[in-house]
Amino acid sequence: MIQAFYQSKPVQDTPYRELVLAHDEGKGWHVLLLGGTEWGKGKSTVLRDESVKDFDEGSIVYDNIYEELMAASWKPYAPYETWD
Image (cartoon, rainbow, N blue to C red; front, top):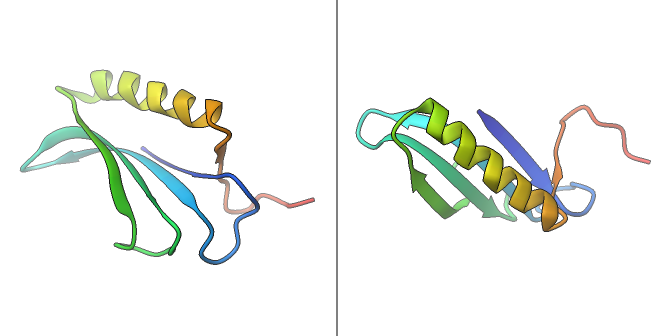
């Protein structure tokens, strides 16, 4: 699962957060919170990396971090969203 977040209208190189629940052969299941300002693959910084035992536990951690981001005024990003 992946969700990107923004605080101000996204344009090139504005601050963002990316929340990821992933499985890696070497690390197992983990929830990553990435962030940065320069958009593009490999250009973010790992802000948080939570190891979890399985997808179900990861979903709970993912949801908790999602709520933390929302409480801190980060908005979920949808690539085809219209801006007013």
